Image (cartoon, rainbow, N blue to C red):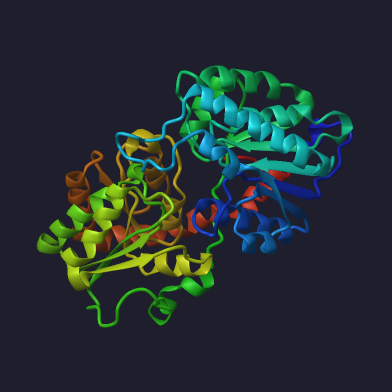
Length: 425
């Protein structure tokens, strides 16, 4: 059954409205996700509108049909004292009171700035919904009245199991389970589909992860010709091990220094580390760790600092043989990873946490990977040694898995699902 079957007016969807309070820069998941959906929608002849924060990079606002809605910068100081660096002792964990406050502001922002823009032929797509946004977004959808109410899809990418979240989700379920709202839930892992289906009492579809990867320019033949980040003169047998994305503790960035030092002394193959550093989530602990990597590794490490354009980012990823996605399994047990998906789509060998949705997806697709037994530098080092020792076999598996992976994980399939033409997984 398509979404258009759920409405009395049965208007065809003519515009996809993407709601993304986290779209701030061209780096990372938010920008690439939105760009992929916008491009796929335009290929279908659909209009798009992006609702983002006032702090969005102005060049993004020029690229998309974009409206500033969310006052993220104005309420952030009310929640955390940013003069105190984030650390293990000060992890900036939300409280129930803070969650309620942010949800209220999100609701007010949408009510005032987004409601007048909505049309009955819209599909409102909210991807990467966080616990401090979901109730505000749900209340806003519930406030859109009558025949002018658009259809909507809420994508749940993280599992929220804090005690104070349960009543929030119950309230969301009560509001959104009304057939008049014409809302569907979705997620991008089977594990979250099951968990949220039980929690919300409603079917939660599994949908693909869209990535705007320029495959034609990233073929093996073009790889050497388009090399931008690796130094000249690397031995042909050198394995390039890479890290990219946010420098967060949950992503194991602080393990890089001890692993680099250990592997360069006792690696089963010639090795070069290619590391991208984003300042966005730096703590002083991480900064000190990074400053010590280069002197310790000498010419065997290349560090790329700052935000990369989307095209440069994919060139960066393509220069890597083994991609480190060694995230904390406590935080990523059920959650997908855009970086891991990119590794699969580009035929890379990935180092991923054991027992997570990433490992199960790797097994489903047949891609080559090495699993990290626990969240520690020692376990990461052992997994990376296995990936290096078994690289020829693992790489062959990864390359063989790309066709099936690309058939599923693409923006055209996602947009077809959103407008009701394609069934979920």
